[in-house]
Length: 178
Image 1 (spheres, rainbow, N blue to C red):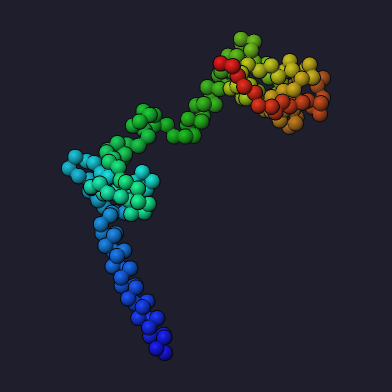
Image 2: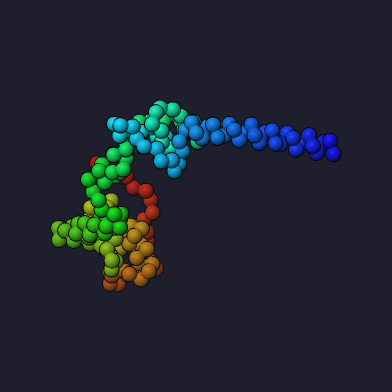
């Protein structure tokens, strides 16, 4: 019984000691969800690793101990759109990139530099080489790019007289001298 009472007393004492220390630390350093108002010049200090930690004076992050850095809250709130000048959402940027790539492939085809061997022309050759010799390569029994090879495996090959099972893919890493 004495042992139980000693353990209970130690537990209560340590709870009070650690609880007091934790509350003192949390009151000294604002953390996530704090309603800290910026200083008169609109600047606050924040942790590079924990941007939710904000303070109106220099110090260290209570979460990781890193030095708080000065941030201009107006720039922080503006985010990426102010830095890049582009308010497009990611899906819109992807749609625009696909459209530009399709336009480039059509232009390369008009110039005679893009002769793909599958129904939906590959992107890899246009991006890597700004040309596509895969139709000529497949006619000659040479290996084609991985995108064209996958197209032939799906049954999307468009070169007449070519057996899809005999189409070879070129999966080596290639380097460009630019």
